[in-house]
Image (cartoon, rainbow over all chains, first blue to last red; front, side):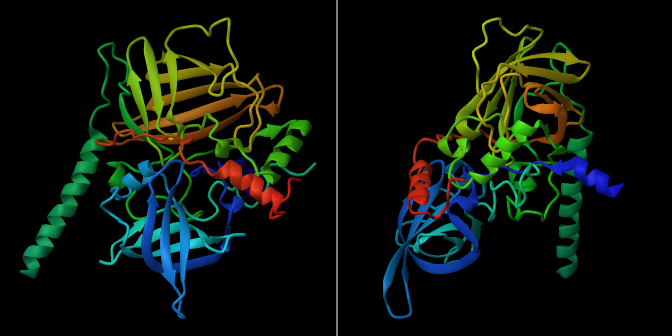
Length: 137
Length: 257
């Protein structure tokens, strides 16, 4: 009986994002990076944050992070030009891109004072789940 | 001192509980014609009362599976040819999808991240949808026009059945809708019932005799969000996806199969 119900009911795939996470990002590659903000694109359908990250040998790499659009960021506590500014040091948790070594999909940003804000949706959003919506014929 | 703090905390907790209960027990607002008043800003796909901040505190969008999905329903039952097309679309989701090209989609009842606003008069209900700047104009007690143009959001008319707003929508184009497929025969009947001050119970039955073997129904809730305003959302502004899709295909990172 419970099996029959499982077949009949399903959870509508949540469409939180503009595109499928898996199009660009790899859930098996989480990364936490600290660096200095060099540029902020406060734009639709996604914001982009750029960070200069210095490695242990002193080499600096500029990373690009995708995030929520401005309307969503505003509702989770962000203010344009106030919350994060060029020159600030921040720590970002993200998932790396499949084929771009310096691109990642951000989830949280932690600021110097310890305050942490959501900056993007969870991994896997918009992917339609791990199983196809129909059984292969 | 500690006792005072504990009392203050208890009072604060009691007052927030009381205010939530008070909102719950407030009568359903009504228009001068006696119909439920849906005017206001709402969050689709949520079942938590309160302001946007109260209802979405902590992680606004939770990790998949960590919270029960409010929107649920029957799985669409596709005809074999349509099932193949849906599977094809699912397999292509990493290189192409209409949403990533900024094309409109009628998301029912909406996307939990983005508010919607009802603007209601005795003759018309308008639903403003923040995501992708969409709107639905729903004339009440009207007929669908004879000269329908195929449309992304279709053509809607509505009427009241008691306290339930019933919205009938036809006139769709044949675009893929995310990973789903529909034809120009898609017919949607939605039912919006304001069951208490905070909550609209939502139900939509989708029938498409060219694509489905039988109609299916989804269920959800839409919650009032006092103090929230709609904001701008212009998908075309900095959409890097079409270029990205081409790059992924060209470099063989993903295959169009």
